[in-house]
Length: 236
Length: 208
Image (cartoon, rainbow over all chains, first blue to last red; front, top):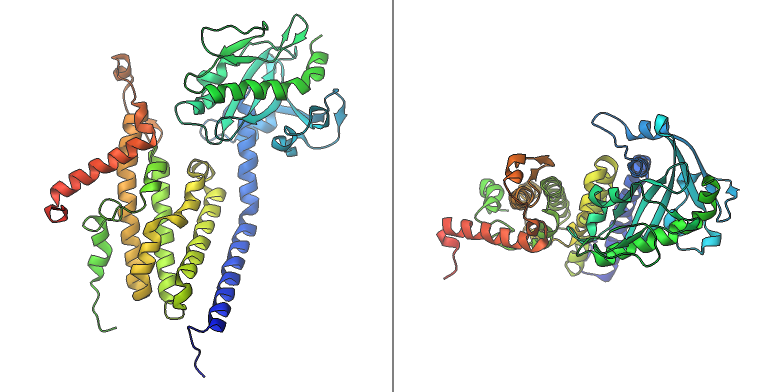
């Protein structure tokens, strides 16, 4: 008996067989490439963390080696400063930043820069104009002076909001303080020529990238404040 | 199949006379999106060549078994499968580029060039001819991407493949990179300029 190619039975069997075939091919590809993809993601995260202390991999250097040789310790704390068990590197900070501050798991990376001393690196997550923005901020061992900052974004406008990932923006944070006269005040991002009302340290916003700049300020406020207790124990 | 196919014209026609981008005006969306820098434009071109060639071959191989009422769905499933595989491979072996191309690799699925070639050519031709047709159209697409990417990166960032080519002395003399070139509208203008030059050299393509 020859199959009628236009019959419903043939059509249904055909499409089911095709989808099962393509589906298993995809599942196989995804499974076999998973370890490599995860390694790439991890290396990219290490690159971002190291960028906040102004360390990048030159040609031929492995960022993983740089990370391993400088990050001496990483741990998770709660808002009150107490430590929690777990691997700081595996904390999904995007999800944590959506929880109330008291419930968040807060990763801290301790970076040894030799004669420049210990730096404390903390992640920040927030929202820009079009999508998520995130970054890492490193503090000197006094817990107040910012040593460096790194910002990244998913889809901010090129040339405007996307400028937050450029060193020209992030290097402005170097040397700013989050403790002013014993008060915790995260660094603000405001238009050039204006002054903050609260006396906190500030950097210049990106012209044309107002919403993204405000997003950075809100992100710093939201994500650095839970570290207040931890940073003030350093700040003695 | 009594009809004799001219393999040479199948392969080379899409380079210029029947170019998918500047003559058929297909796949414009991705031309706008991925050509701000040269490197992602190249990777996008290679990805489209690969996906187009293989989906053409696969559809051509199974063309006589496909029920006509679901043929578009079958084409989509094949293309989507190949695109996801390419995207997974890029994430594993070319992570930085895959980050730059972000969603646009996935959007190859909706690239009209693919559906157009599958429907117009692979459904009616043998695998070898379909393979050449896929390569030809893919290369025709990639050429335009690379030309646009070349000019946009050169004028917009002063670099090529990330290396600075505009000397520092130019900047000291007051030369400024044209930031407008990085924005999508200038890709459209660049494509229009290519079409202008191309039409002026191929009078038979000019509409009256």
